[in-house]
Amino acid sequence: VRVIEFFMNNKDCNANIVTDVITKDGAKVNYFSVDRFSKESKVYNAFRSSVERNVKLDVTRAVLSEANIISDTLINLVSKGAEVDVKSIAISEGTQIQNINTETHHLDKNTYSQITNQGVTNDSSQLVFNNTGKIYKGMSSSKAFQSTRGIILSKKSSLSVNPFLLIDEFDVEAGHGATIGKFDDDSLFYLMSRGLTKSDAEKLIIAGFITPILEGIKNEFLKEQINHIINYKLREKR
Image 1 (cartoon, rainbow, N blue to C red):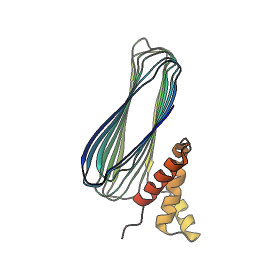
Image 2: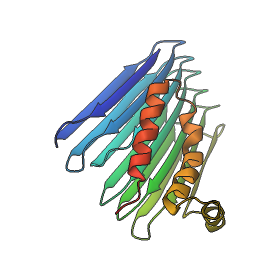
Image 3: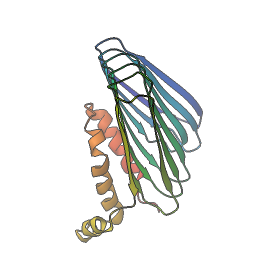
């Protein structure tokens, strides 16, 4: 089954959104969400799921609002063979504050989780990724991995990562990695030497940066909308 949620507002608001997905044995679920709330809104957006035996759950969340936002993802892997792959894209601008929190709880043996984050910050914005992978005692042969990549476009913006692996069992695999920095000056200079403006060159590099996540989206309309929003958020400020 494929589930798509697209959240937008017509006027400033306070939004509290919670989505629960309960799977049964052997299910394959692809979940996609995009949020696009206005600057003066305040948003809490949560996704929660219990993943049963031999279930494969893919979660992709595009956090593209102009509002201050907290985005929570909580996954409980409750039976053997349960797998989850959580991917998040976040772009912050202006004075935005975004907190992207992802937790995976391994509550049975032979379970698997992967958390992947891609983030971009600009202007005076703040973006924080909090990742937690918990493998409980006795849950052997489980695997928990985390990966975060970030690009900082402005000296006044910040992007931080807090990875937590809480492991109470010996026979497991777990790891995390993070790469955060500014644009590669050589790549930027090369593209500008070919006639691109700085803004267009940055957009092209970021497009390559987030493509691996977008490739997993089979709905062409959704992919087009995400690309449109990303281009708008990375527009050249006047």
